[in-house]
Structure formats: structure tokens, C-alpha cells
Length: 333
Image 1 (cartoon, rainbow, N blue to C red):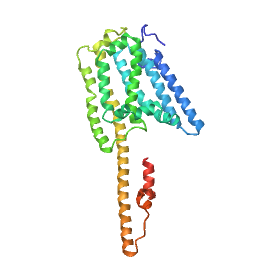
Image 2: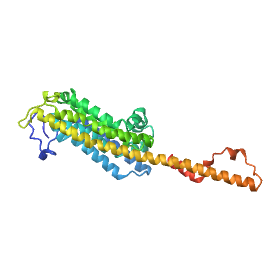
Image 3: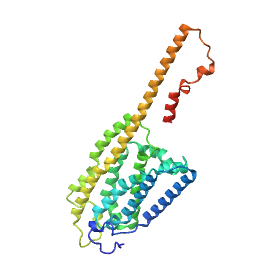
Image 4: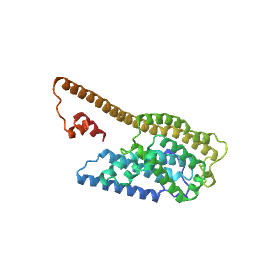
């Protein structure tokens, strides 16, 4: 472990896993999340409810990634190299939350606690439904990037250690709020047309997201407060070179890391299209059954006396008697 007040070695590949700077806030979050996960899985096992092992593995990998980003190489050099700080922020905003949420913590909370679980209530809340809109998620990312990379936040993160620690958690939570409704089995009820339009909008936003990185890459003067407070080492690169390199990273990451959002929206589109197709099939089957029943009644009227029908049978919906329709309704519910 290395104290940030001491001189750091050059940030090379050889020190990726040898330089550490422990962050208490992040370690506490990791401990709490790990205890909650293990406890919840044990509760399900006692109830005899199976929980896929691969989800626990994915969650453990997500916690490890979060721990390395907030306590390892990225944290050790985050206040000395602007490009490392930018990379750390992007990982916390876009990569770490996706890895954790992919393990389906909402489903685990629902199975153990029920609908009153905090994660379940969030996904079903107005905020959760707003963020689950495929128009919103990709649009929030460039806004957050603009705010944290072009304002006073970088300087605060270098100058005040508690700001640096807190910002890491804020970015991770913000990323989780964006991706949680998209990856959760609880979220998403838009029709295929809405999601299809959102996919087109997302493709446009993919180009817009590159703007902050392009601006930073092409600037010929220092625009970040980060360089006002960073410590200087023997290997420290010029401020403008570091800033332009950070712009290149932000530019490329904005294009590359937006793709998962588009893939999630595309997946939602497939699900919505299948749901709409099932609903259309239900209506068509209902019409087919109704026409067949009407034809049989007309044939019965022509060939035999009309059989009296009780009021209860006449008022009972036809789909309650048809086994095919009962099965379709059961699957949709």
C-alpha cells in the first residue's frame, strides 16, 4: 500500500495491482453488500428456493471490481493523473453498476423480503419508472460527464479527500439508478413502438455523447481545476497533454460504453415486441373462437330448437371457459 503523500512510481502496467490506497467508505459499502447478499441467499436456501450460483459469482466479481477501482490503482493515482481520474469515474458510472445489477439484486430482494423491499419499491416508483424509460438512461450519461469533468468537481476531488471518496459512491449509485430498471426483471412495460423509437433516439445520443470528449480533446488551454491542486511527481506529464489524453479516453469510452445501453434497449425492444405479439395473438384467437361459436349457434338455430341458457352462463366471459385463452392469460400475468 502506498500513501498518496509520498512519491508514486510512474503509472505503468506493472503497478496495476501493486498500488493501493484504501478508501473507508467503499470498503464499508462492500462489506454491507456482501453480508446482505450472503444472508439473503441463505434465507432462500432455508425456504427451499433455489438461487442460481452464477448470479452470486457475478455479484462477487462486481464487488471485486468496485473494490479495485475505489481502492487500487485507479484510486492511488486518481489525484495525480487526470486521465486516471476520468477513467475511474467512467468505470464507476457505467461499468461497475452494470456488473452488480446484472446479478439481479432486485429479484433477490423480492424473493427474500417481498414487494416492500427497498430495491423493489425503487424500481416500481415514479423515479424508477422514469429512469427505466429508454429515452432517459443514455441521455443522463453525457449530462453527468459534462458536470463532473468541466466544472469545479475535479479540483474539489483532489483538494478534499472526503469529496473524492464521496464522489466515487455517488457515481456508482447514479450508475446503478440508471441501469437498475433496465436490467431488472421488474422494470419496463413500454410498447414495442415506444422502445423502437427510443432505440433510434439512442443511436443519435451515441453521437451526442462523444461531444464532451471531443471538446476536451481539442482544447488548447487548461480548462479543468484538477491541475490547480494535483501533486507533482518526477514523471508528471504536462497538464495540457494530460487533459487532451483524458479527452481521448472520454471520447472513446462514451462511444464504447454507450453500446451496452443500446443493447439493453434492443433487448427491451425484443421483449416488448414479443409481448405485443402475444396480445395480438390473444385478440385474434378471441375473434376466431367467437366466430366459430357464432357459427355453431347459427347452425344450432337452423337445425334444432334453441337450448335455454341460464343467466350465469350468458354473463360468464368466454375466455374463462376456453383452455387456450386461460393459458395465455396465465403466462402474461
